[in-house]
Length: 195
Image (cartoon, rainbow, N blue to C red; front, side, top):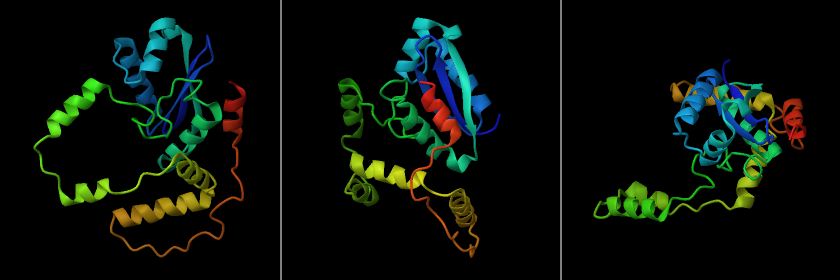
């Protein structure tokens, strides 16, 4: 199947879980194994699977895409289907497994206990001083990211690969890097209308 964005749809209530993977087939197999054994890390999806049973769920591929655009297209699908508020997604931001989740008090206490008495590095302390972005700033960044042209996304991918390989990159930036407004793909529109 390759890489892409997928849905796990409950055909009884039409709620969906949106995900992305570099190997959709492998990821689907992992979902099924974890859900069947009751060990899935998404409690909303696990509860629904236990309640309705495996036959109530369908797996759908929304779009096949290159790995470098997985999170962008996953985020667009999460937003289009409102999969956090009316579906099974927990994380509000694609690729961020703890976004929108909180640790229990017992977990916080254990984490605190394990950290006590350990000296932090200067880099760690400096990193903690970095300001967190507000919801509006995150939304604006996602909007900017979603308006990138395919040519610019491809150029960024090649530039990043050259940097990782330690090679020089002299390719000029594309003339148009961003669309004037957010473009909706037919698959995203179809996914949004299916809810």
